[in-house]
Image 1 (cartoon, helix red, strand yellow):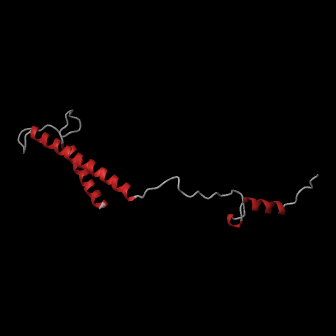
Image 2: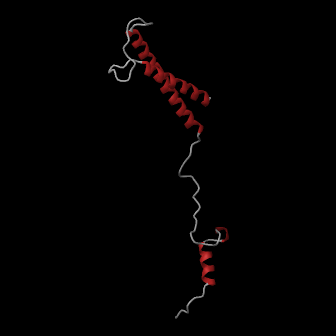
Image 3: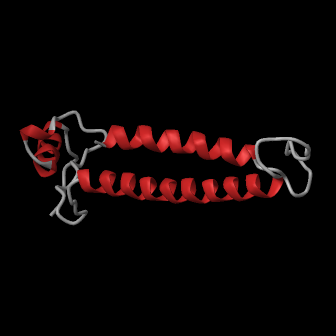
Length: 121
């Protein structure tokens, strides 16, 4: 279903781009503009048709955009950042894997293996 809506959305995007590029530019900038004499429709009729077509395609574009965003959010399950398991804590510089005990056990082993200076009491 989602891929069908994406294809429809892309077709609407291409049609909307084409309709916008065909419209006559008011400022005479990049538009094809002008021309006049004989043609299929009058200048005013073409302008009204292209404006109406642009508005309809824009409305359908917004509807498909909202539908696609709703589908994307609906397919994901609800998640919480509070109920996640904590990340494992790694100990830098320890040669003992964490499965053999905690940090206190590794410190005790290091303490027993290194010679210590005599302590006075």
